[in-house]
Image 1 (cartoon, rainbow, N blue to C red):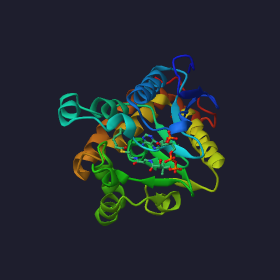
Image 2: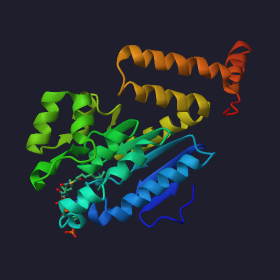
Image 3: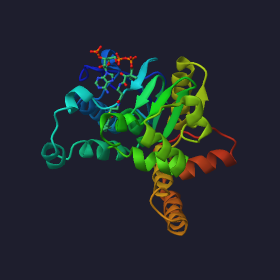
Length: 263
Ligand code: CO8
């Protein structure tokens, strides 16, 4: 994980196998300009390729995870440009194609595209005082990176409809109570530490098995239960062809700690 290529991101490896990507455009509350989105993308891609990394954490600062797409950059966009150049589409597609687990640690504002990026990740952790929201209605637009779909799927139609139609924010505590966040922490630091600990635990397992876990859970979002279970069964059977399955089960039988080869 190297810092060199990035102006607005801080890259680190706080624990073995874990990449921590800290968004660092504090003056605009980490608003996502297209250059910033390109950097985030490139960081995801380089972590994805880095064989020493098993899981990644993305976070902002205490004030903001991301306050949304950069409104100042977006304000003069025309329909022809947006539609003609597929505004946002390649970006959100590339993020959703990352195969290593992504944990987001949300502190401060996660609004608009920020809330949507959090929902594109695999696991959301947040602090109780975090502020989520889809405020696009206040700008005369609608959510554009999956907010209306992912939020509705997780918290239900009535709540999502209320939030999207009113543009009202919701807290980290509510995100947890509604099942959007997996865990809620009292302080921002605890939230980042918690995310890094979980990423380190995931990174300590077989990369092959981790990749397959993410793949099968994600399939549940697109398939019905019968097809989903069939898909899971095929992948489950496939793992008996991996070296790590032999390593893991042999270690259990011999009361040893497995030494994964990630094959
Ligand atoms: N874009 C550009 N600049 C921003 C943004 C933003 N989204 N959010 C904050 N800033 C800037 C402010 O303009 C200000 O800059 P300056 O100091 O130069 O005036 C600085 O950050 C600090 O902001 P405030 O002075 O407003 O600070 P407050 O503490 O008073 O308020 C808020 C913080 C509540 C976060 C407020 O700034 C705000 O409401 N921001 C806009 C939130 C918003 O509407 N977000 C949704 C944007 S639309 C969107 O995301 C569409 C999704 C498209 C998909 C994106 C791809 C994934």
